[in-house]
Image: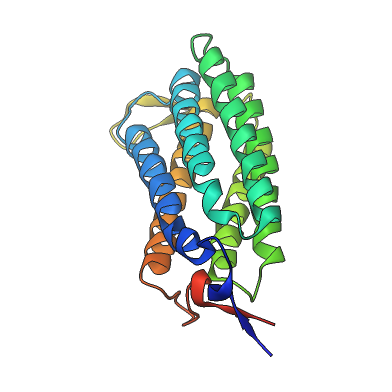
Amino acid sequence: MATPVTAAPNGTAQSRSRYWLVPIARAAVAAVAAVVITFSQNHSATLGLTVFGAFAVLTALAIFAGSGSLKADRVAQHTFVAQAVLTLAAGAVALAFAASASLPAFFAIVLIWALLTGALELYNGFRLRGRSPLARDWTAIGLVTVLLAVAFLVVPQGLDQQFTGPDGVERSLTASIVAVGVYGAYAAIVAVLLVIGGFSLKWGTDPSGRVAPETESHP
């Protein structure tokens, strides 16, 4: 016999229905980060640390603010609080190192942050797979974030390749340019995924046709 989540006490259904604001807020932060990097001609470590630092601090605040909407699932709530703490710490450290323009710091901070928070989001997604539309969104964001860590692990920090552009001008492809560009692409992808997920929750269904969390039934 299925038991609807709507029977939960203390307004759980209402709080879950407001969770859509969290991915939308996160999407807005990620979109701004992607735009700043896209339209910046200097993909330096300073830019990367500054943009990532601001992105991480604002993302952490959005996650903190929305964690109360997950009170019906204490495991998810505690996991996302931990994710917010890690993200806030990463952002603060990145901003502290921004003035030093340290490329190794940029690589280390983003790699460790992406690996840890991506794993936490993947864990929540797999744990609720088939039971909540939130699982699809968390799995997608977690996977993309882990892939960001893999990309930073693969890019050699000593990369400095000289080449001649189509206009005949000598240019160089450095680790900083690649890493900041990869992070910008990550931010753009995450923004799109979060917007889709957020509005799917607001409208009450996800693309697979399942109902939103507050009306979904569990065995």
